[in-house]
Image (cartoon, rainbow, N blue to C red; front, side, top):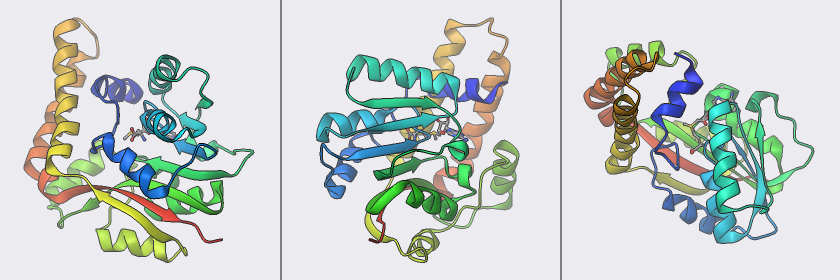
Length: 250
Ligand SMILES: C[S@@+](CC[C@H](N)C(=O)[O-])C[C@H]1O[C@@H](n2cnc3c(N)ncnc32)[C@H](O)[C@@H]1O
């Protein structure tokens, strides 16, 4: 089935489309000491929760972009409901093609590092979007322990464009190698991961009951079952998720 539709249906109940409680975004903004004058770029913004929360808490404005037509439509509806006229611009575009005409105070890419081939490429690209002494924010999976070959095979078949996954020490070193300094780090808990994964299964269950004749239903349910099995057998133990913020040099 269409990938954008798969992610739209599986994430229909998520505010934040990553394994971290939305309130952690507030802690991150506090750590960065965001201010109302700050301009924030969020590449692969999902449902625009980061921009909405940071606007509500700190008054920031900014730009979110996402390549999915479904996701950007949901993001636009949410911004229109929660912060109309707030200075949050949403762009339907691929991150790799985005060429902004301004330098931002903070540039984020949470959960879509494949856009620039992985963690190091993402940090480099985001650094190019911010002013000197600005901040870059990434959300990235990492290995908590070495994965068994069966799980690697599953991931490669499921998401062929998934870039290489590192351990935490390597993720940190790749940033230091670019002259970035760590400002904030938060790893998601097992409970946050479980909620992120199982909210997808609950969304599929809800969709299946409401749309039993949908032509994509069988593919949707089959894929979700495979994913649940891989998560419970391996992902929950091996794969971590972390939010990072780094300060760019002057
Ligand atoms: C795991 S979700 C994370 C969304 C959001 N950052 C969040 O944490 O809530 C990944 C997002 O990346 C978007 N995406 C995937 N490929 C993209 C690309 N090439 N350019 C821009 N967005 C992309 C998807 O549509 C999806 O919204």
